[in-house]
Image (cartoon, rainbow, N blue to C red; front, side, top):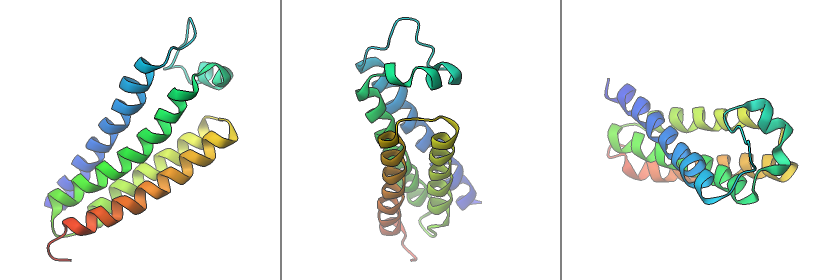
Length: 135
């Protein structure tokens, strides 16, 4: 039961981390064009060139940081298994790749988002393993 809770809380923490970096920081630091509809997928697809570069970088960093943070928290709660961390990280990497496929972006954006998601998983895995006492 503890591992299920660790996985759920890890996913929640990962999602909150992504939201903070992507929406709270990225959307407030960078000026979007008049009439921007950031919750409208069609608007984003059709206006990707109008979204500030800094905001795009925040999205990449958000996915990277969310994966690491979620995996770390899941391991910190579990303390006995890396499986909750792997599930958390795996689902967040999957979500990143689904976003890349579903929302066409510039090539650099898609590649960096994917690479940093995988790198986040690898770093998260190392950090998670250090939290496990019976490993």
